[in-house]
Image (cartoon, rainbow, N blue to C red; front, side, top):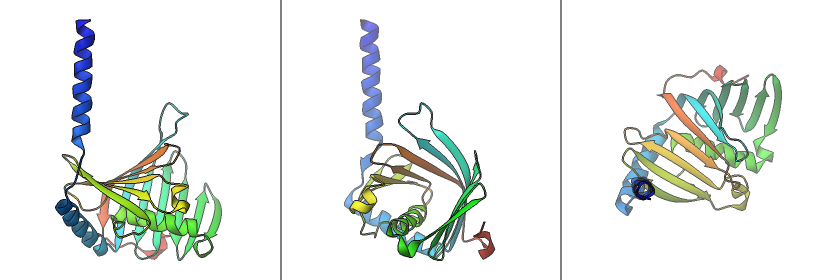
Length: 210
């Protein structure tokens, strides 16, 4: 009985400590954070980064892990290249989406597909951190010891059909996003962790192709 009581106390202490790690920012902190992040995002002309993606599906016991690289060149070029476990690419370029699924290529015109257009803007804004002025989201801000956190909930029915919450994590040492979590209405989620980030290094236009 005593052992169970000790374990319960440890659990409750751990739970309270974990919950205390994340707290809401004050209005002054929010204002300062938004200004600095948006100002930094506006300076980004190119961005190159590696990433690891974790996909959680409720019916699977383990997350699906994949990895690759991402290229961004403002205003309208974005390329995701998955290298593991399979070769897969998604290219947003010149108002079109090109998909390369292990050599099989498809094209979608963004001008005729508002869903892809909004998703494209959301992805670019998520990576750069320039989503705070978007009218499509309600945004709340939090902090913990090492990070600043922005949680975005879609206002529009169109977006909320696919995304329940977008969570952006910023390390205290950086003003660009270090991790993105996309939570679906089903509670399944995708977590993308960025590493080896390079900002405003030359990227040739020819890199944005399959």
